[in-house]
Length: 147
Length: 179
Image 1 (cartoon, rainbow over the protein chains, first blue to last red):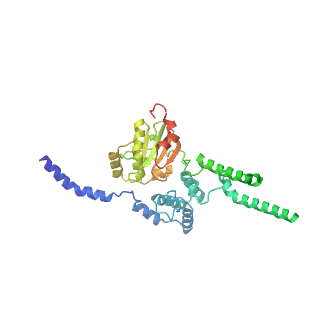
Image 2 (image 1 turned 90 degrees about the vertical axis):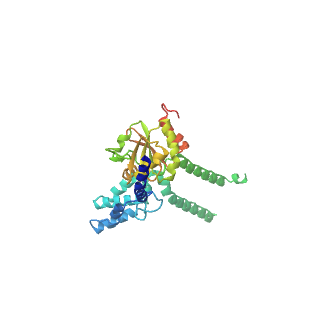
Image 3 (image 1 turned 120 degrees about the horizontal axis):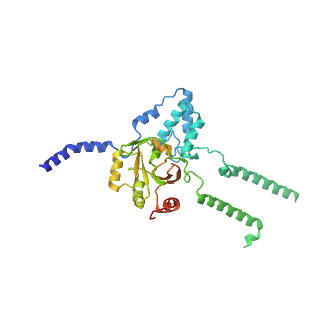
């Protein structure tokens, strides 16, 4: 009798478990609510909208090596885009948003990293090489003329 | 040897070797670049929920030990699966590990742990990645070394291996442990 009940339960429950497994996808997909919020975000003024989108374009998605927050479809990029939009819309300055991003993901998210003594060589080497080249070439030309 | 009689060539070669050495030393030191130093220095103090459904006021209240690992994982993440057995051995050695379940389904996550065993003392459930944004999580797996006061000491990107463990983590857990 017990076995029959068990079997009956199994038969009864199986459609539910199937329904559940088809609902739960492997990924936690960015839910449609978030999608709607990002895609249909309403800014207070067109001015704010323009600057927010410009700013989001100038920030690199941390997850995907070379796409900005507007281009990327990764869930993280969508979340971050929404944060950028919200912050700009609520009147925060671009610098505040940039600080928020770099505080979490580092300078990596900036397409134009700031100048520090650590990367001074990187910024300065081309100029240095040009100066050295000019110096050497003037010197050698002068030497040849004297000869 | 004829080359070295020309002093200019010699100096040039020395300069090039020196420059390459400088670059290699920079790469080796791993102090520059986004893959080496954690940007977020303090563990976020935000309310969150655990995988078992319990909600807690502050994620940093989970940090009970002097040093612990915070491991970011998800059931959909293949590398996490291959990392899992190593986490289990670490847990058996007595290393406290807090799991951070990242953008996952609750059912899938609990099922994963039921199958493979759980190396975690506590598991934070972060389906929308909100806490993870505060922590600066880029992808899975990631392992953070956090002390009791919530200071993030080190961040390891990718799979945690024995080599990385010995180099970066082991010294914090030496006391009273069979490592």
